[in-house]
Amino acid sequence: MKKYKRIRDLREDKDLTQAKLAEKLNITQRTYSRYENADSMMPLDILIQLADFHDVSIDYLLERTNIPTRYPKD
Image (tube, rainbow, N blue to C red):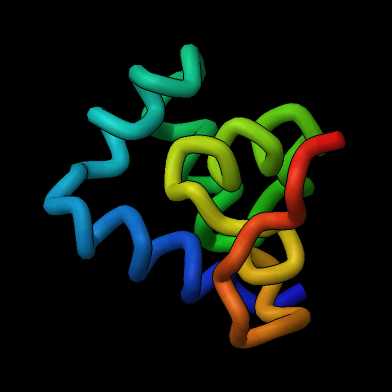
């Protein structure tokens, strides 16, 4: 699996360190680093939290689309 470049870029765009974002996700910096570098599988709940935090779709985070717009909630 390739690195999650878009997830890193979004974090850096907000001038957040891995430690600060990990704190918001209630995980350790080391765990977050492993997810961001694709050294460990990122759980779905973390992907959802990241998508919500950055206000983008999961597909955008995973680079399946270049359109960041989230899907409307029903």
